[in-house]
Image 1 (cartoon, rainbow, N blue to C red):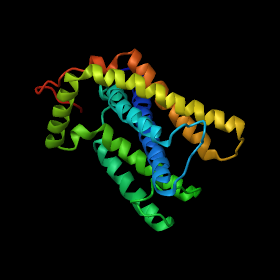
Image 2 (cartoon, rainbow, N blue to C red):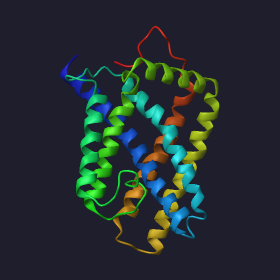
Image 3 (cartoon, helix red, strand yellow):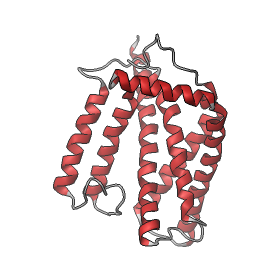
Image 4 (cartoon, rainbow, N blue to C red):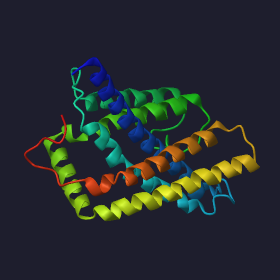
Length: 233
């Protein structure tokens, strides 16, 4: 493999991991918003966002995007340095957990649910999700039992591929609506709250990922795993 080819492989792997990370960030942000809606009677970006329950659809869109996003990098042979990268993921999650416990006043259970403008909290959240991204991307290598379970899930998903394909289109469209609604709210009610812009950014990337993946027919192209071929390496 030439240097240019190696650089392209690494760039594509990084792109795959970035998409997975964005999906997880989207889930964590929307989970926090829903927690505020259900437990604090919060009405975020109302009336542009007509009903807070619609954020659930954004979470579904992010989850649906994880598999095709991971598939981009799973086909590449990047090798590994000392360990599988899920090991590094567990290390990042472990030290991030200690960081959150030591330098923030929010428990690990609530770190993704309670709103906080603290840079320390935001940093802890980011690295926790980064570690989880590495683990999630390399999940088939964690154990044979895990690989077997994932293969069963993939086989089941293959039987309802058109459902996931259309769900990706519909949830992607709803997620784009959420992005547009928050943008409209910001235009009508100017705010310097950076969290609003960060939320819009993740929603936009999630919706575009849904549309591009659906156009590529990623879910329609998945095939049952071959038991004689390792899922990942």
